Amino acid sequence: MRPPEPSGFSLSRFFSMPGQACRVALLLLSPLVATEAHGEQLKVWATGAYSFSDELGGFHITGVSGIGTKDDPIVITEELNSATPVTLTIRTTKPIEAFGRAGDVANGIMYMRIEVLNNSGQAWVEFQFELQEILNQPSVFGDGLSFDQRNKTPDNIVSSSFADFDRDFEPYDRLLFKNGKIDPLLTGRFEFLITDYTPRWTFYMVQDPRIPTG
Image: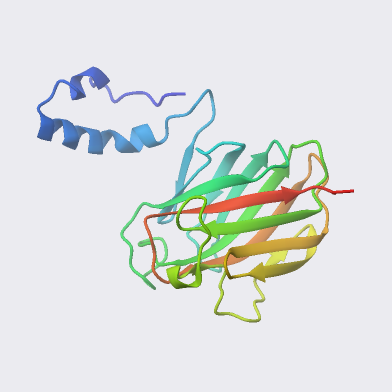
């Protein structure tokens, strides 16, 4: 659904403006364009200092909230319609300032809670997350992005559906939840900390539900 245009404004007017004025108008309009949907699905959700998008397809975001602190984590609710990997696009919407105040700036510290509805018709017996600074390329140690890699004994990685987890950092930044199950039409909850000591404007998180192989 296209967001309604502000009263008295027409999209056609922007493209008849001189170059500089048109660029300014498009920048002012960009918050509306960013939320344009295909069909009835909203594609971009903003909370705290970040926005989250299902624009790469395969799943639907149904809600977001929080600023990314331990007491007020970023909560993303989603629906996955298959047991194939999908990619969440994450962008900063406020200035980047490492270790600045959460919510006011993108500070590289993001406590996350992902709540995923399994609408794939198949049980998931594992669930993996992978961080990427460049789409479809592994996140290496030097980029500063990880699932709290510096903490060797994390106590904030938990799931409602899986008892255990593994983390891999080279050559990927991956977090695998295992020893559990999410049946069709049930929701699984995952909590973890993302750290990015060299914050970027855009990065990605691949979500990969696993089904039995036998």
